[in-house]
Amino acid sequence: MTGDWMMSGWMMSGWMTGSVLAIAALLDFWIGDPWNWLHPVQVMGWVIGRYSQVALKTLKSPLLQRVAGVGLGLLLISGSGIAGWLLIVLGMNIHSWFGGAIASILLASCLAARSLRRAATEVIEPLEKDDLQEARSRLSLYVGRDTDQLSREEILRAVFETVTENAVDGIMAPLFYALVGAVLGQMITGGSLPGLSWSVALALAFKASSTLDSMVGYRTVPYTDLGWFSARTDDVLTWLPCRLTVLTIGVLSRRPRQVWSICRRDAPQDPSPNAGWSECVYAAALRVQVGGTNVYRGQVKSKPILGDADEPLAIAKVYAALRLTRWTVLIWLTLGVTALVV
Image (cartoon, rainbow, N blue to C red; front, side, top):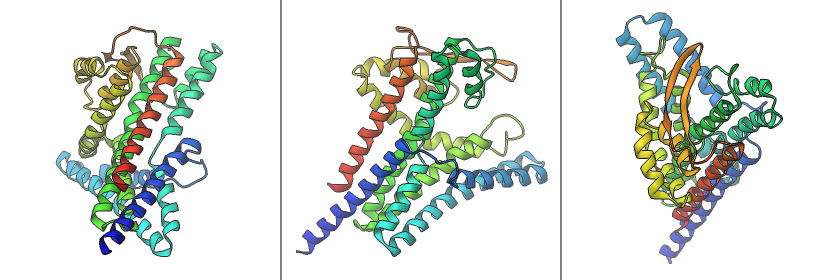
């Protein structure tokens, strides 16, 4: 009798946690990040900015800056995770549905599916009207490369590369840690509802790592030493979800061996241990080629060529890449919810 009750409690908790994860994904897909809402990344960005300003101003030694970089990374990543965990525990103590609502909102804030889709659409709309000037102007809001001289083909490549590189950092990796946290929390708490707090904690911790990398994880001054820990940590945390994304998209392409072969051939050429794989798997799955020459603040840089140019890189390919990401999210959610309730 006791065993049946415990199993029932496990399944109820699993279904609720799975429902929260699904609701979070739907909130991100339909609503995204409302402009007038305080976003966790804004708080993270404020902390990073203030800490970096003080560290760079007061610490002149490279060694001390590297130590400060470790402190910044540990502070923000662990602090974000603990804050998320406490918020859900407190919410659950008020009412399980209240805690679930907070978890849904926080988890949705960790995902960026709608943001990526909106960014791609905003650039593609003027491109469809052959308004290259407007397309270049809008693209400059989302990429670091110089856009004022880009051709139609180069604009499309930039959009495709942005959508596919950020699919892992902005969607799949935080979803991966949310799912891992949900299953881990279920196991640790024996199926009690506060186990959901682990899902939020890991997702926010990864989001903190990603935000650190985007703000200070550069090899150039002034962040060469201060940002080294953030860059390495993000590389490590993104490695597994990136490879799982590659495997999933390979299966979805129905040519997994060929896609994997192309990725193994081309992706390691990229200096990033993850970005090259992320861009390459989409290119291989959709039979297009990306990479080439980019200009950053007047400096010409060459990115490795990824994929085979079997088909032209058209607007439809960008939307196809977004669909691949949506299918990958659906597959991971299905597998995660199944793990929670079985």
